[in-house]
Image 1: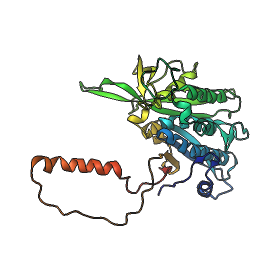
Image 2: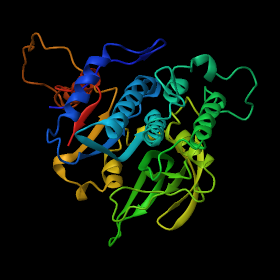
Image 3: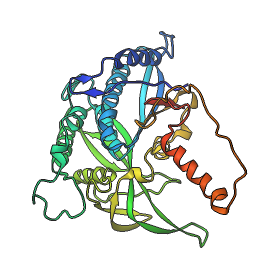
Image 4: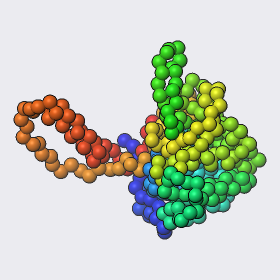
Length: 363
């Protein structure tokens, strides 16, 4: 049974109803082993953070609280030693994924921008409104395709990069991370050892967040025998601002934000293409998280995937049901088309039965 939490950020900070459940989660993690005369038991964690437009703010409180709690357990807990094996995200979740990796690497004793209402999660999401995004007048004459501007988001992204440049991160910290993106126009791909061609728009960007001289850098990460469609960003190691463009591409919700042009390398060939929101095809990049973590080499008994999805809500209890009288259908359309429309209508309004609130922890 997955562990779940309820609560979110508001303008006064973290919802206090979340605290008892977080403490329960903390207790469960701290109680995996009671052998105090032995070394701490390792726990391998991967975080998968979905997109959800403004629900990124809903996720942000969970992300900050979980990372804060887990880093405290890692440095001060008696029984378990959490390891962050991968962090992935799509759309708004890609921004929270980067921030999760950043705060995982920040020194536990350094409180810089790491308080409940004074952290980058809070600054990025809570202090952001429609008035900051809507294009006013002719301030962006070259933007002919979207409602919103990225001016304020660029400032917030630069604040994150500035934070990463400070010498406040743990020596040797390394977090594999990745983001899903969607190519605006499909790429025709020929399957290996065949003449079969398919059109593909989904791609993933695998990266490594790494400490160097107390600061954080971002590098391309190679994954052997991947089942995903991986692209790499040339020279991102020397130009960290390219990570900002990847985040903007992953969160380029159609109509809201302009498409983002990325220079990238795919299957040994350099390309330059426009991308939109990664959540269009892969809103929960679990495969990428698995491959980044090399999960097949980890102990299944100590391997956990923390899936954060604000669309995965707890449904109301079913109190009753009704069945309409049915007669034998007459006519081609009535017999064959109408049932399909009924199914679409049901799937559009009904949440998944048995789903739970975010986040779920699965093995």
